[in-house]
Structure formats: structure tokens, C-alpha cells
Length: 251
Image 1 (cartoon, helix red, strand yellow):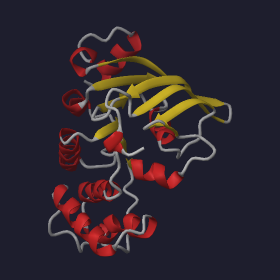
Image 2 (tube, helix red, strand yellow):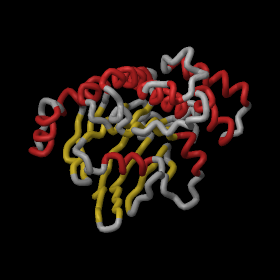
Image 3 (cartoon, helix red, strand yellow):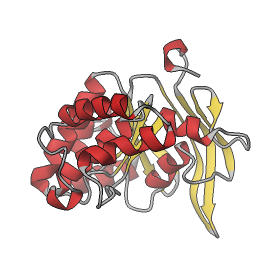
Image 4 (spheres, helix red, strand yellow):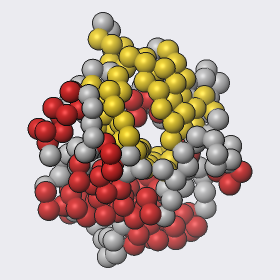
């Protein structure tokens, strides 16, 4: 479904009773939540709690064993899913930038719309240049990834994902591998996307950022959502001992 016809009263992403195991290890044990269009949702929790697995299930990078994930009403794990259509709707940025080292920043941003969507090169280049400006990398269009800092490479990766014009953006610990001074420039880029109304689901350990930008925060531990709420109450009124212990270690 096209986002322009999407009913804003319905969740744009709906996750219901999702279970996922890798061999004997059950990583997700019945996770459910909704994300409305334009919302920013942050998923936090200790390592191994299933956070990254969950958002990788949202764009079908991981299969699920049971449950349902709908994006704009489309079952992500349906056998007849149009994977290209899903990739257009749901962009994803990873902890590792995964840029093509032999392609310039501009070429990296242009590749998918040209090669996958078969869009006209001239039109895509214009859009890619606009996106590179949007992530504040003017003048870096001809730079190769090896000539860019980690934070700059991550912003190229964000621009590359945006070039597909997604309706939902997933971010998986995208600042985890960055130097502290480059974290901020990446978070500013995401904040601006959120302010423009992009639906964002982030796995993050940047609590200050989550407090400032999220509409809703979910705390996961051992494959379940332990506690959730808006930042105003989540950080100050956490009730579950696991949540309180986790927050006491990182705040």
C-alpha cells in the first residue's frame, strides 16, 4: 500500500506474538507492539535480549517461527511477499556501514534506485545529491568510504537507505562502532528525520537520545518486552526490577 493512502489511525507496523529461535536458543518469546506512522520507537535492553533479531524480522532479514508482522497491512513473512516492495517500504541501517569501498559516496547512494528499481540515472543522481546535503556531507560526493570517518560513512549509509524513499526506517545500534565525537553527528541526522515525520524504529544504547527523540521506549530482556512507556515516565517510574537495574547501570 502507498503511504499517501495509509489510514493514520492504523499502525504502520504491527508486531503480534512473534517467536524466533536459533536452534535450541529461543531469542524472541512472544513480542507484540504497534508503531504508528511518524512515531519514533526505541528498543533498549541488555546484549542478547533479542533487540536486533526483532528489527531484522521487521524487514524479513530474519524469518519468524510464529506470529505476525504487518507493514502497511502487508504480512512481512507471507510466502508470496514481494521482497522488492518490502525493501522499498522499509529501509535499514546497520552498525556496520556496509558501503561498497570501490564506489564513491554518491555512487553508493545511487546504486539501489538505479540497479534495483531501474529508475533513471539523472533523476536518481539529483535525489542522491540532495540526500548527501541532507546528511551534511556536501563536498564528499566523490569521496570513497576509506576517505571518510566512521560517522561520515554511517551518514552515507543513512542517505543510501533514504534513496529508496522508504516509509519506515530501522536503525540497528548504528552508533555502537563510532567514536564518541562522531556519534552526535549521526544522532542529529536521525533527529532531523524524526522531526520531518519519518517513522523510525531504533535499537540503541544512547539513552539521552532515546529520552529526547522517542515517542515510546520498549525495554526487552531475554526475548520479552519487560516494560514500555513514553520517555517522560519510562526513565523515572520504571516498575520492573529488571528495568530499574538496567537503567541504574547505564544512566
